[in-house]
Length: 216
Image (cartoon, rainbow, N blue to C red):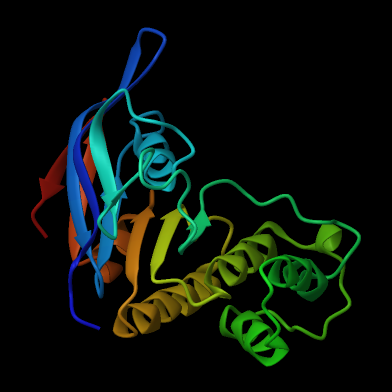
């Protein structure tokens, strides 16, 4: 896959009541790279991600994904794996059954691929353990499996390591590196400086709604 700008954010502005959450934010991301965004809670990271996904519409500016303008040529981002908030799973069903329901909704039928994806994130697909009994780290692994089970070109991840122990973080770093080698575009926000330093090709800081590059 040749590198190209798959996400282009140009002069993005977003205000909620009197609060300017995004202030002329611009960003260009291409395939085969990992982009990191750091910043305190409330700095605007999650709002930017939600605007890219189409959950919020910009007040000013433009976002293009694969050349199509969000909010005009496309309403919601569908060709991406997304972790922004914890998915609402069916607590009385196993992790595999939860993913299988979602897989079938999208007319996907390759159960071997689904099982392999769960193994890649460190979950046992044949386990009967109900999601309601999962630890926070296991739920995060399940969310990662959901985000990647359809082999999407773009991954947008807000705190993807949340709840993982040391070994789990190491596993996921290797997982993300493998996805990058496959030519995926990964955009992630993390409070963990090590995640950013180890994984990311380019790093940006969000502060009071303004985005600026960090030299790494």
